[in-house]
Length: 530
Image (tube, rainbow, N blue to C red; front, side):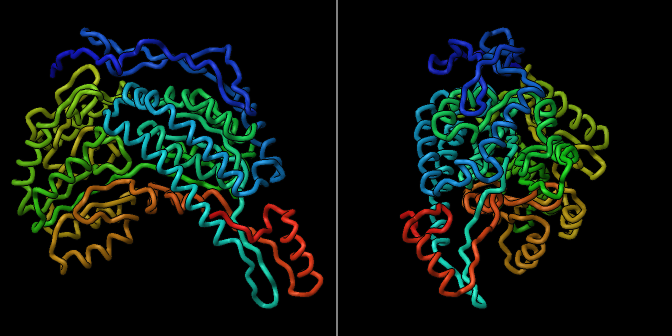
Protein backbone atom coordinates (compact mmCIF):
# COMPACT_ATOMS: atom_id res chain seq x y z
CA UNK A 1 0.00 0.00 0.00
CA UNK A 2 1.45 3.33 -1.05
CA UNK A 3 0.11 6.55 0.39
CA UNK A 4 0.96 9.85 -1.30
CA UNK A 5 2.77 12.45 0.76
CA UNK A 6 0.64 15.50 1.49
CA UNK A 7 2.09 18.77 2.64
CA UNK A 8 1.50 19.26 6.36
CA UNK A 9 -0.69 22.29 7.11
CA UNK A 10 1.17 25.15 8.75
CA UNK A 11 -0.87 24.89 11.97
CA UNK A 12 0.25 21.29 12.53
CA UNK A 13 3.91 21.41 11.47
CA UNK A 14 6.62 20.68 14.00
CA UNK A 15 8.51 23.94 13.96
CA UNK A 16 10.55 23.37 17.09
CA UNK A 17 11.47 20.41 19.25
CA UNK A 18 10.04 20.03 22.74
CA UNK A 19 12.85 18.99 25.05
CA UNK A 20 11.24 18.40 28.42
CA UNK A 21 14.10 19.11 30.83
CA UNK A 22 12.20 19.43 34.12
CA UNK A 23 10.18 17.15 36.32
CA UNK A 24 7.77 18.05 39.10
CA UNK A 25 8.78 17.15 42.65
CA UNK A 26 7.79 18.78 45.95
CA UNK A 27 6.22 21.72 44.17
CA UNK A 28 9.36 22.50 42.16
CA UNK A 29 9.91 22.11 38.42
CA UNK A 30 13.34 20.66 38.97
CA UNK A 31 15.81 20.79 36.13
CA UNK A 32 17.04 17.47 34.77
CA UNK A 33 20.66 17.21 33.70
CA UNK A 34 20.87 13.46 33.16
CA UNK A 35 20.15 11.12 30.26
CA UNK A 36 17.19 11.73 28.01
CA UNK A 37 15.07 9.67 25.61
CA UNK A 38 14.18 11.00 22.18
CA UNK A 39 10.49 10.92 21.32
CA UNK A 40 9.61 10.10 17.72
CA UNK A 41 6.32 10.19 15.87
CA UNK A 42 5.32 7.43 13.46
CA UNK A 43 4.14 10.26 11.20
CA UNK A 44 6.64 11.37 8.57
CA UNK A 45 7.38 15.01 7.82
CA UNK A 46 9.12 14.21 4.56
CA UNK A 47 8.15 12.55 1.28
CA UNK A 48 10.66 9.75 1.82
CA UNK A 49 9.35 8.07 4.94
CA UNK A 50 11.21 8.86 8.14
CA UNK A 51 9.88 9.02 11.74
CA UNK A 52 9.66 12.62 12.97
CA UNK A 53 11.66 13.68 16.01
CA UNK A 54 9.36 15.56 18.37
CA UNK A 55 11.66 16.17 21.32
CA UNK A 56 12.93 14.35 24.39
CA UNK A 57 12.05 13.50 28.00
CA UNK A 58 14.17 12.63 31.04
CA UNK A 59 15.29 9.03 31.39
CA UNK A 60 14.99 8.81 35.16
CA UNK A 61 15.69 6.00 37.55
CA UNK A 62 15.53 4.74 41.13
CA UNK A 63 17.00 7.87 42.72
CA UNK A 64 14.36 10.15 41.22
CA UNK A 65 11.63 7.58 41.87
CA UNK A 66 12.39 7.59 45.59
CA UNK A 67 12.69 11.38 45.53
CA UNK A 68 9.13 11.87 44.23
CA UNK A 69 7.88 9.16 46.59
CA UNK A 70 9.37 11.00 49.56
CA UNK A 71 7.75 14.23 48.36
CA UNK A 72 4.32 12.60 48.12
CA UNK A 73 4.72 10.95 51.55
CA UNK A 74 5.79 14.23 53.14
CA UNK A 75 2.84 16.08 51.61
CA UNK A 76 0.45 13.46 52.97
CA UNK A 77 2.36 13.37 56.29
CA UNK A 78 0.50 10.37 57.74
CA UNK A 79 -2.79 12.14 57.15
CA UNK A 80 -1.64 15.34 58.85
CA UNK A 81 -0.56 17.21 55.73
CA UNK A 82 -2.12 20.39 54.42
CA UNK A 83 -3.85 18.63 51.52
CA UNK A 84 -5.57 15.70 53.27
CA UNK A 85 -6.79 17.96 56.11
CA UNK A 86 -7.88 20.82 53.87
CA UNK A 87 -11.50 21.91 53.61
CA UNK A 88 -13.40 20.37 50.72
CA UNK A 89 -14.10 23.84 49.33
CA UNK A 90 -10.40 24.67 49.30
CA UNK A 91 -9.44 21.47 47.48
CA UNK A 92 -12.13 22.26 44.93
CA UNK A 93 -10.69 25.77 44.44
CA UNK A 94 -7.28 24.22 43.68
CA UNK A 95 -8.86 21.90 41.12
CA UNK A 96 -10.77 24.78 39.51
CA UNK A 97 -7.52 26.74 39.23
CA UNK A 98 -5.89 23.75 37.54
CA UNK A 99 -8.61 23.16 34.96
CA UNK A 100 -8.69 26.88 34.16
CA UNK A 101 -4.95 26.84 33.41
CA UNK A 102 -5.30 23.54 31.56
CA UNK A 103 -7.82 25.00 29.10
CA UNK A 104 -5.24 27.54 27.92
CA UNK A 105 -3.07 24.66 26.66
CA UNK A 106 -5.71 23.03 24.45
CA UNK A 107 -4.04 23.79 21.12
CA UNK A 108 -0.63 22.47 22.22
CA UNK A 109 -2.04 19.28 23.78
CA UNK A 110 -4.29 18.50 20.78
CA UNK A 111 -1.37 18.92 18.39
CA UNK A 112 0.78 16.55 20.44
CA UNK A 113 -2.05 14.00 20.67
CA UNK A 114 -2.02 13.83 16.88
CA UNK A 115 1.73 13.62 16.48
CA UNK A 116 2.54 11.34 19.41
CA UNK A 117 -0.17 8.70 19.13
CA UNK A 118 -1.70 9.33 15.70
CA UNK A 119 -5.18 10.19 16.97
CA UNK A 120 -7.17 12.07 14.34
CA UNK A 121 -8.01 15.74 14.86
CA UNK A 122 -11.71 15.40 15.84
CA UNK A 123 -10.91 12.62 18.35
CA UNK A 124 -7.93 14.56 19.76
CA UNK A 125 -10.10 17.62 20.31
CA UNK A 126 -12.78 15.43 21.81
CA UNK A 127 -10.32 13.81 24.21
CA UNK A 128 -9.19 17.21 25.50
CA UNK A 129 -12.70 18.63 25.83
CA UNK A 130 -14.03 15.44 27.39
CA UNK A 131 -11.26 15.56 30.00
CA UNK A 132 -12.16 19.14 30.92
CA UNK A 133 -15.82 18.13 31.23
CA UNK A 134 -14.77 15.16 33.37
CA UNK A 135 -12.96 17.44 35.82
CA UNK A 136 -15.93 19.79 36.13
CA UNK A 137 -18.31 16.84 36.56
CA UNK A 138 -16.03 15.41 39.25
CA UNK A 139 -16.05 18.73 41.09
CA UNK A 140 -19.86 18.86 40.97
CA UNK A 141 -20.20 15.26 42.19
CA UNK A 142 -17.76 15.97 45.03
CA UNK A 143 -19.88 18.98 46.04
CA UNK A 144 -22.95 16.73 46.15
CA UNK A 145 -21.04 14.19 48.23
CA UNK A 146 -20.11 16.97 50.63
CA UNK A 147 -23.72 18.15 50.86
CA UNK A 148 -24.92 14.62 51.56
CA UNK A 149 -22.35 14.30 54.36
CA UNK A 150 -23.15 17.60 56.07
CA UNK A 151 -25.25 15.99 58.80
CA UNK A 152 -25.20 13.74 61.84
CA UNK A 153 -26.74 10.28 61.92
CA UNK A 154 -28.07 8.70 65.08
CA UNK A 155 -28.43 5.00 65.89
CA UNK A 156 -28.66 3.20 69.23
CA UNK A 157 -27.90 6.37 71.13
CA UNK A 158 -24.75 7.18 69.16
CA UNK A 159 -24.26 10.13 66.84
CA UNK A 160 -22.03 9.65 63.79
CA UNK A 161 -20.66 12.24 61.41
CA UNK A 162 -19.69 10.25 58.32
CA UNK A 163 -17.55 11.50 55.45
CA UNK A 164 -15.21 10.02 52.90
CA UNK A 165 -11.52 10.53 53.49
CA UNK A 166 -8.27 9.94 51.60
CA UNK A 167 -6.24 6.75 51.69
CA UNK A 168 -2.73 8.11 51.28
CA UNK A 169 -0.19 8.00 48.46
CA UNK A 170 -1.24 7.04 44.94
CA UNK A 171 0.97 5.73 42.14
CA UNK A 172 -0.77 6.68 38.89
CA UNK A 173 0.16 4.98 35.62
CA UNK A 174 -1.94 5.87 32.59
CA UNK A 175 -2.26 4.31 29.11
CA UNK A 176 -0.93 5.53 25.78
CA UNK A 177 -4.20 5.29 23.86
CA UNK A 178 -5.95 7.92 25.99
CA UNK A 179 -2.92 9.54 27.62
CA UNK A 180 -4.92 12.55 28.79
CA UNK A 181 -8.49 11.39 29.44
CA UNK A 182 -7.90 7.93 30.91
CA UNK A 183 -4.95 9.13 32.96
CA UNK A 184 -6.90 12.04 34.40
CA UNK A 185 -9.82 9.73 35.19
CA UNK A 186 -7.40 8.19 37.69
CA UNK A 187 -5.44 11.24 38.79
CA UNK A 188 -8.21 13.82 39.26
CA UNK A 189 -10.50 11.88 41.63
CA UNK A 190 -7.46 10.63 43.56
CA UNK A 191 -6.30 14.20 44.13
CA UNK A 192 -9.60 15.85 44.92
CA UNK A 193 -10.31 13.25 47.62
CA UNK A 194 -7.18 14.39 49.48
CA UNK A 195 -4.62 11.80 48.38
CA UNK A 196 -1.15 12.77 47.17
CA UNK A 197 0.12 11.38 43.90
CA UNK A 198 3.09 10.20 41.89
CA UNK A 199 2.31 10.23 38.19
CA UNK A 200 4.39 8.66 35.43
CA UNK A 201 3.11 9.42 31.91
CA UNK A 202 2.79 6.62 29.35
CA UNK A 203 5.61 5.84 26.91
CA UNK A 204 3.56 7.19 24.00
CA UNK A 205 1.76 10.46 24.70
CA UNK A 206 4.41 11.57 27.16
CA UNK A 207 5.27 14.97 25.70
CA UNK A 208 1.67 16.18 25.79
CA UNK A 209 1.90 16.28 29.60
CA UNK A 210 4.71 18.87 29.34
CA UNK A 211 2.41 21.87 28.64
CA UNK A 212 0.47 21.01 31.82
CA UNK A 213 3.38 20.75 34.27
CA UNK A 214 3.21 24.42 35.23
CA UNK A 215 -0.54 24.14 35.85
CA UNK A 216 0.04 21.25 38.24
CA UNK A 217 2.82 23.13 39.99
CA UNK A 218 0.87 26.36 40.48
CA UNK A 219 -2.53 24.87 41.34
CA UNK A 220 -1.71 22.44 44.15
CA UNK A 221 0.33 22.62 47.37
CA UNK A 222 3.89 21.33 47.09
CA UNK A 223 4.26 17.58 46.93
CA UNK A 224 0.58 16.89 46.22
CA UNK A 225 1.34 16.08 42.57
CA UNK A 226 4.73 14.73 41.54
CA UNK A 227 5.51 13.85 37.92
CA UNK A 228 8.39 11.63 36.87
CA UNK A 229 9.59 10.34 33.51
CA UNK A 230 11.23 7.10 32.48
CA UNK A 231 10.51 3.41 31.95
CA UNK A 232 7.71 2.00 34.05
CA UNK A 233 9.58 -0.98 35.42
CA UNK A 234 12.59 1.19 36.31
CA UNK A 235 10.78 3.94 38.23
CA UNK A 236 7.60 2.19 39.38
CA UNK A 237 9.32 -0.87 40.85
CA UNK A 238 11.31 0.88 43.62
CA UNK A 239 8.27 2.99 44.47
CA UNK A 240 6.14 -0.11 44.97
CA UNK A 241 8.93 -2.01 46.74
CA UNK A 242 9.06 0.72 49.39
CA UNK A 243 5.65 -0.34 50.70
CA UNK A 244 4.71 3.33 51.05
CA UNK A 245 2.15 3.38 48.22
CA UNK A 246 -1.44 3.03 49.41
CA UNK A 247 -3.17 2.92 46.01
CA UNK A 248 -1.97 1.53 42.69
CA UNK A 249 -3.98 3.25 39.95
CA UNK A 250 -3.17 1.75 36.56
CA UNK A 251 -4.82 1.52 33.17
CA UNK A 252 -2.93 -0.91 31.01
CA UNK A 253 -1.95 -4.55 31.00
CA UNK A 254 -2.79 -7.13 33.66
CA UNK A 255 0.77 -8.50 33.55
CA UNK A 256 2.11 -5.09 34.56
CA UNK A 257 -0.50 -4.76 37.30
CA UNK A 258 0.31 -8.22 38.67
CA UNK A 259 4.04 -7.58 38.58
CA UNK A 260 3.72 -4.31 40.50
CA UNK A 261 1.40 -5.82 43.09
CA UNK A 262 3.87 -8.62 43.69
CA UNK A 263 6.63 -6.15 44.52
CA UNK A 264 4.61 -4.42 47.25
CA UNK A 265 5.60 -5.90 50.65
CA UNK A 266 2.18 -5.36 52.25
CA UNK A 267 -0.38 -6.32 49.64
CA UNK A 268 -3.18 -6.38 52.18
CA UNK A 269 -2.74 -2.62 52.57
CA UNK A 270 -2.73 -1.90 48.85
CA UNK A 271 -5.89 -0.67 47.20
CA UNK A 272 -6.11 -1.38 43.49
CA UNK A 273 -7.84 0.77 40.90
CA UNK A 274 -7.19 -1.00 37.60
CA UNK A 275 -8.52 -0.74 34.07
CA UNK A 276 -7.05 -3.63 32.12
CA UNK A 277 -7.42 -5.49 28.84
CA UNK A 278 -10.63 -6.80 27.29
CA UNK A 279 -11.82 -8.97 24.41
CA UNK A 280 -15.22 -7.40 23.89
CA UNK A 281 -17.46 -9.37 21.52
CA UNK A 282 -20.31 -8.29 19.28
CA UNK A 283 -23.18 -10.74 18.88
CA UNK A 284 -25.20 -10.15 15.70
CA UNK A 285 -28.52 -12.02 15.86
CA UNK A 286 -30.39 -13.11 12.71
CA UNK A 287 -33.04 -10.39 13.07
CA UNK A 288 -30.52 -7.57 13.50
CA UNK A 289 -30.81 -4.38 11.48
CA UNK A 290 -27.72 -5.01 9.35
CA UNK A 291 -27.17 -1.39 8.38
CA UNK A 292 -27.17 -0.38 12.04
CA UNK A 293 -25.06 -3.36 13.13
CA UNK A 294 -22.44 -2.71 10.48
CA UNK A 295 -22.26 1.01 11.32
CA UNK A 296 -21.72 0.25 14.99
CA UNK A 297 -19.27 -2.61 14.34
CA UNK A 298 -17.16 -0.36 12.10
CA UNK A 299 -16.98 2.23 14.87
CA UNK A 300 -16.49 -0.43 17.54
CA UNK A 301 -13.66 -2.29 15.82
CA UNK A 302 -11.75 0.53 14.15
CA UNK A 303 -12.17 3.79 16.06
CA UNK A 304 -8.59 4.84 16.75
CA UNK A 305 -7.48 1.76 14.81
CA UNK A 306 -8.99 -0.58 17.40
CA UNK A 307 -6.48 0.63 20.01
CA UNK A 308 -9.03 0.81 22.81
CA UNK A 309 -9.77 -1.58 25.66
CA UNK A 310 -13.43 -0.89 24.83
CA UNK A 311 -13.02 -1.84 21.17
CA UNK A 312 -14.97 -4.72 19.67
CA UNK A 313 -12.31 -7.38 19.23
CA UNK A 314 -14.32 -10.34 17.95
CA UNK A 315 -17.58 -10.47 15.98
CA UNK A 316 -20.05 -13.36 16.34
CA UNK A 317 -22.50 -13.30 13.43
CA UNK A 318 -25.39 -15.76 13.03
CA UNK A 319 -24.81 -18.20 10.18
CA UNK A 320 -28.06 -17.14 8.43
CA UNK A 321 -26.75 -13.62 7.84
CA UNK A 322 -22.96 -14.00 8.04
CA UNK A 323 -22.41 -14.04 4.26
CA UNK A 324 -24.33 -10.79 3.75
CA UNK A 325 -22.78 -9.21 6.83
CA UNK A 326 -19.24 -10.08 5.72
CA UNK A 327 -19.82 -8.75 2.21
CA UNK A 328 -21.16 -5.40 3.31
CA UNK A 329 -18.86 -5.04 6.31
CA UNK A 330 -15.73 -5.70 4.23
CA UNK A 331 -16.71 -3.07 1.67
CA UNK A 332 -17.21 -0.55 4.48
CA UNK A 333 -13.79 -1.34 5.97
CA UNK A 334 -12.09 -0.89 2.61
CA UNK A 335 -13.82 2.47 2.15
CA UNK A 336 -12.20 3.92 5.28
CA UNK A 337 -9.62 6.60 4.55
CA UNK A 338 -6.04 6.24 5.79
CA UNK A 339 -3.91 9.33 6.29
CA UNK A 340 -2.41 11.74 8.76
CA UNK A 341 -4.56 12.82 11.73
CA UNK A 342 -5.30 16.35 10.52
CA UNK A 343 -6.49 15.32 7.03
CA UNK A 344 -10.27 15.73 6.57
CA UNK A 345 -12.29 12.52 6.72
CA UNK A 346 -9.40 10.35 7.91
CA UNK A 347 -10.48 7.39 10.05
CA UNK A 348 -7.32 5.27 9.98
CA UNK A 349 -4.05 6.82 11.12
CA UNK A 350 -0.40 5.81 11.68
CA UNK A 351 0.17 3.42 14.58
CA UNK A 352 2.31 4.86 17.41
CA UNK A 353 3.98 1.54 18.25
CA UNK A 354 6.59 0.79 15.59
CA UNK A 355 6.32 -2.96 16.13
CA UNK A 356 2.51 -3.09 15.96
CA UNK A 357 2.17 -3.64 12.16
CA UNK A 358 4.50 -6.65 12.38
CA UNK A 359 2.50 -8.05 15.31
CA UNK A 360 -0.81 -7.65 13.48
CA UNK A 361 0.77 -9.36 10.45
CA UNK A 362 1.72 -12.30 12.69
CA UNK A 363 -1.91 -12.63 13.83
CA UNK A 364 -3.14 -12.51 10.24
CA UNK A 365 -0.60 -15.08 9.04
CA UNK A 366 -1.41 -17.42 11.92
CA UNK A 367 -5.14 -17.23 11.17
CA UNK A 368 -4.65 -17.77 7.43
CA UNK A 369 -2.42 -20.77 8.08
CA UNK A 370 -5.29 -22.34 10.04
CA UNK A 371 -7.97 -21.78 7.43
CA UNK A 372 -9.13 -18.19 7.79
CA UNK A 373 -9.31 -15.90 4.77
CA UNK A 374 -8.79 -12.17 4.44
CA UNK A 375 -12.20 -11.26 3.04
CA UNK A 376 -11.64 -7.55 2.38
CA UNK A 377 -9.56 -6.51 -0.63
CA UNK A 378 -7.20 -4.14 1.19
CA UNK A 379 -6.75 -6.30 4.28
CA UNK A 380 -3.15 -6.69 5.41
CA UNK A 381 -1.66 -4.12 3.03
CA UNK A 382 1.17 -2.26 4.73
CA UNK A 383 2.96 1.06 4.75
CA UNK A 384 5.97 2.02 6.81
CA UNK A 385 3.75 2.94 9.76
CA UNK A 386 0.49 1.07 9.21
CA UNK A 387 -1.18 -2.19 8.29
CA UNK A 388 -4.61 -1.93 6.70
CA UNK A 389 -7.41 -3.60 8.70
CA UNK A 390 -7.91 -7.24 7.79
CA UNK A 391 -11.33 -8.85 8.19
CA UNK A 392 -10.71 -12.54 8.89
CA UNK A 393 -13.28 -15.31 8.36
CA UNK A 394 -13.86 -18.05 9.39
CA UNK A 395 -11.98 -17.76 12.68
CA UNK A 396 -11.69 -20.58 15.21
CA UNK A 397 -10.72 -20.65 18.86
CA UNK A 398 -7.25 -22.05 18.22
CA UNK A 399 -6.13 -18.96 16.34
CA UNK A 400 -4.04 -16.33 18.11
CA UNK A 401 -6.35 -13.57 16.88
CA UNK A 402 -9.17 -15.19 18.86
CA UNK A 403 -7.12 -15.75 22.01
CA UNK A 404 -5.13 -12.51 22.22
CA UNK A 405 -6.26 -8.92 22.68
CA UNK A 406 -5.06 -7.61 19.31
CA UNK A 407 -5.33 -3.91 20.22
CA UNK A 408 -5.02 -2.94 16.60
CA UNK A 409 -6.56 -3.13 13.12
CA UNK A 410 -7.54 -6.77 12.61
CA UNK A 411 -11.11 -8.06 12.88
CA UNK A 412 -11.91 -11.74 13.53
CA UNK A 413 -15.38 -12.94 12.53
CA UNK A 414 -17.00 -16.17 13.72
CA UNK A 415 -20.39 -17.58 12.75
CA UNK A 416 -22.71 -19.31 15.20
CA UNK A 417 -25.96 -21.27 15.05
CA UNK A 418 -26.75 -21.56 18.75
CA UNK A 419 -26.50 -18.56 21.10
CA UNK A 420 -24.89 -20.88 23.63
CA UNK A 421 -21.70 -20.82 21.52
CA UNK A 422 -20.73 -17.16 22.10
CA UNK A 423 -22.07 -17.33 25.66
CA UNK A 424 -19.86 -20.30 26.47
CA UNK A 425 -16.86 -18.54 24.95
CA UNK A 426 -17.52 -15.46 27.06
CA UNK A 427 -17.89 -17.55 30.21
CA UNK A 428 -14.54 -19.25 29.53
CA UNK A 429 -12.78 -16.02 28.61
CA UNK A 430 -10.31 -14.33 30.96
CA UNK A 431 -12.06 -11.03 30.28
CA UNK A 432 -15.43 -9.55 31.12
CA UNK A 433 -15.70 -5.88 30.34
CA UNK A 434 -18.49 -5.31 27.74
CA UNK A 435 -20.52 -6.85 24.93
CA UNK A 436 -22.57 -5.48 22.04
CA UNK A 437 -25.81 -7.24 21.08
CA UNK A 438 -27.63 -6.56 17.82
CA UNK A 439 -31.22 -7.72 17.41
CA UNK A 440 -34.85 -6.76 18.10
CA UNK A 441 -36.83 -9.85 19.15
CA UNK A 442 -37.57 -9.11 22.79
CA UNK A 443 -38.33 -12.76 23.58
CA UNK A 444 -34.77 -13.65 22.53
CA UNK A 445 -33.11 -10.53 23.86
CA UNK A 446 -34.56 -10.71 27.38
CA UNK A 447 -32.96 -14.02 28.51
CA UNK A 448 -29.79 -13.12 26.62
CA UNK A 449 -29.45 -9.83 28.47
CA UNK A 450 -30.18 -11.53 31.80
CA UNK A 451 -27.22 -13.86 31.18
CA UNK A 452 -24.84 -11.29 29.73
CA UNK A 453 -25.09 -8.92 32.70
CA UNK A 454 -23.54 -11.71 34.77
CA UNK A 455 -20.66 -12.19 32.33
CA UNK A 456 -19.69 -8.56 31.66
CA UNK A 457 -20.31 -5.18 33.29
CA UNK A 458 -21.91 -3.36 30.38
CA UNK A 459 -24.32 -4.71 27.77
CA UNK A 460 -24.69 -2.41 24.77
CA UNK A 461 -27.97 -2.90 22.94
CA UNK A 462 -27.62 -2.22 19.21
CA UNK A 463 -24.58 -0.03 19.83
CA UNK A 464 -20.80 -0.44 20.01
CA UNK A 465 -18.85 -0.82 23.24
CA UNK A 466 -17.56 2.42 24.70
CA UNK A 467 -16.29 4.14 27.83
CA UNK A 468 -18.63 7.09 28.01
CA UNK A 469 -20.59 8.87 29.16
CA UNK A 470 -18.19 9.24 32.06
CA UNK A 471 -21.01 9.42 34.60
CA UNK A 472 -21.78 5.73 33.96
CA UNK A 473 -19.82 2.97 35.74
CA UNK A 474 -16.70 1.81 33.94
CA UNK A 475 -15.34 -1.49 35.20
CA UNK A 476 -15.01 -5.16 34.30
CA UNK A 477 -14.97 -8.72 35.57
CA UNK A 478 -12.06 -11.16 35.79
CA UNK A 479 -8.86 -9.79 34.21
CA UNK A 480 -10.53 -6.68 32.76
CA UNK A 481 -10.68 -4.38 35.78
CA UNK A 482 -10.53 -3.94 39.54
CA UNK A 483 -12.63 -1.20 41.17
CA UNK A 484 -14.99 1.07 39.27
CA UNK A 485 -14.23 4.28 37.42
CA UNK A 486 -16.67 7.02 36.46
CA UNK A 487 -17.32 10.42 37.89
CA UNK A 488 -19.34 9.07 40.81
CA UNK A 489 -17.58 5.77 41.43
CA UNK A 490 -13.99 6.96 41.10
CA UNK A 491 -14.39 9.35 44.04
CA UNK A 492 -15.33 6.33 46.13
CA UNK A 493 -12.60 4.08 44.70
CA UNK A 494 -9.97 6.59 45.88
CA UNK A 495 -11.37 7.13 49.35
CA UNK A 496 -12.70 5.38 52.43
CA UNK A 497 -15.68 6.07 54.69
CA UNK A 498 -14.54 7.47 57.98
CA UNK A 499 -16.49 9.05 60.82
CA UNK A 500 -16.52 10.62 64.24
CA UNK A 501 -18.85 8.94 66.77
CA UNK A 502 -20.11 10.18 70.13
CA UNK A 503 -22.63 8.98 72.67
CA UNK A 504 -25.74 11.09 72.95
CA UNK A 505 -25.21 12.86 76.26
CA UNK A 506 -25.01 16.46 77.41
CA UNK A 507 -21.24 16.41 77.76
CA UNK A 508 -20.54 15.23 74.18
CA UNK A 509 -23.35 17.25 72.65
CA UNK A 510 -21.95 20.45 74.11
CA UNK A 511 -18.54 19.70 72.60
CA UNK A 512 -20.04 18.95 69.20
CA UNK A 513 -22.09 22.12 69.34
CA UNK A 514 -19.00 24.18 70.08
CA UNK A 515 -17.04 22.48 67.27
CA UNK A 516 -19.83 23.35 64.84
CA UNK A 517 -20.32 26.91 66.05
CA UNK A 518 -16.65 27.83 66.08
CA UNK A 519 -15.96 25.98 62.74
CA UNK A 520 -12.63 24.89 64.17
CA UNK A 521 -12.67 21.47 62.47
CA UNK A 522 -12.48 20.91 58.72
CA UNK A 523 -14.01 17.46 59.18
CA UNK A 524 -16.86 18.11 61.61
CA UNK A 525 -19.03 20.56 59.76
CA UNK A 526 -22.62 20.86 58.66
CA UNK A 527 -21.80 23.62 56.19
CA UNK A 528 -21.95 22.64 52.55
CA UNK A 529 -21.04 24.00 49.15
CA UNK A 530 -23.84 25.22 46.91
